[in-house]
Length: 108
Image 1 (cartoon, rainbow, N blue to C red):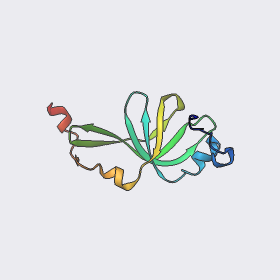
Image 2 (image 1 turned 180 degrees about the vertical axis):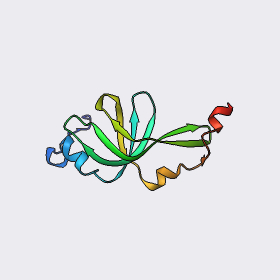
Image 3 (image 1 turned 90 degrees about the vertical axis):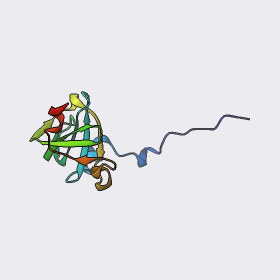
């Protein structure tokens, strides 16, 4: 029996990188940085190097079942980005966790 044949996706079905970001303009994104930080914000602009401008951005810090959000104005350069994905409302609620004041991080 021959092994299954795995074909690459049809090139017409794969948007070029720039177009993929255009489709995400004005939508909330979760950006994971190389140092492990997670930033959520609305994509307002980007350039050909995938530098992003996020509006209303905040860093989300998770400890156990609590999380805090640190507001920040942000321009993320492409060297720092590890992953970009759409931040849907279900994921933003973070099931099983609750939002807390930033002080809880200082107690430990």
